[in-house]
Length: 211
Image (tube, rainbow, N blue to C red; front, top):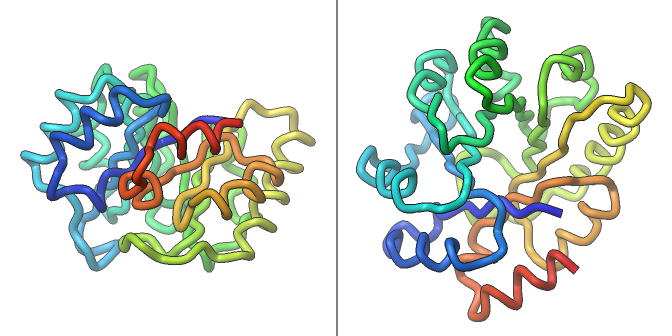
């Protein structure tokens, strides 16, 4: 089980939280990028993004919540980026998948809670990861949507049936309680935000997830 740590809820203490993450057994830093159009909010400033990219010793897991996928992808074709994920609902041109993969970066597709998981089955052979949103994208602190587990389960079975090497990630409302059923249903990567960054004992929190 891998953990991708989202730092959005800790922006007022970003330098310190990056240092803490560097010393924990987390696998990636989840970088939420929002354009104020695909979702109503904006995320990090350019300075904050630079701070994360330069000071994290973890690979960066980029999640684009944007309309203009191609323009934003160009900004993150960097050596320390593990994967770039964009939204199925915003896709206009599938050539962006090849652009990402040609740079040795994994390509992911994310779906909103209201999007049926079956909608992306035809894209599975082309990508490396599916990010299932278990809350509405664009806002932190929401509760996990229970029917996300059914999506995870269906997707796990489809990937296994097709014998594909596609990872399943889930993002939104992940804590100790919601992590367990996600793992049981076949998730490979948990995106964890405030439950981790606000934890009194972050090392113990990570250890409980990774048991």
